[in-house]
Amino acid sequence: MTEPTCQLYLISPLDVGGDFPDRLDRALAAGMGLATAFQFRVKDVDQHEAARLAAPLQEICAAHDVGFIVNDSVALAKRLKADGVHLGQSDGDVREAREELGRDVQIGVTCHASRHLAMEAGDAGADYVAFGAFFPSETKASEHRPEPALLSWWSSLFEIPCVAIGGITPDNCAPLVEAGADFLAVSHAIWGGDEVAAIKAFAEVIGSET
Image (cartoon, rainbow, N blue to C red; front, side, top):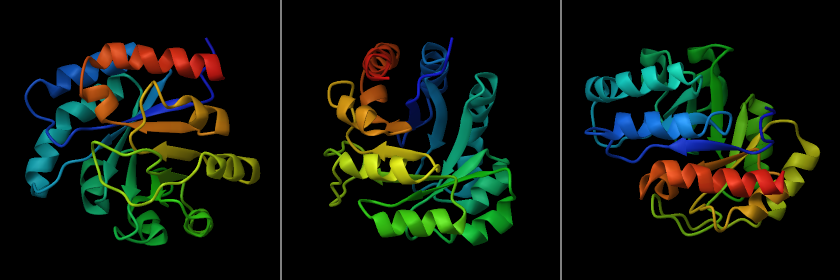
């Protein structure tokens, strides 16, 4: 089976305790070949607690051959030997993160709706750029609202993958897939209900658009 040209980049809810490891396992099993990256995103916990929470999730990702990406923290990514780190505009410099983490670690950068920020990130050696929020988000407020044409512009000029983020659901994602998003970053659309049904709903849309 060939992999779809657009894939899912799952972002964790803030609460990753309780039954979340089981939910992640089910989602990744349902999304084989479609869900290829997972971002560990927790707030207001120290690094020791974050590492404890991350451990079972990292194992599940490894078992499914899914990249385990740490949000915001180069130090935590290094401690966990994560597959990657995602940097917001205030989370540090791509070149410094590369020096700290090595050549094999994936580094992504939030670029909001800015072509300039995306080109800067690419020049600095980012492995992917993220644009958004394309729609109002249940997960994170954003005043930036790019148009799908931004994805088309980027993918026509650059080989670095682009990620679309922000309020993306199976019902509204088709224009983003059509515009050339390499990944759809999704959180509430997956974890806000039945994760397996949500993955399958995304798969249907992505399959029909690619």
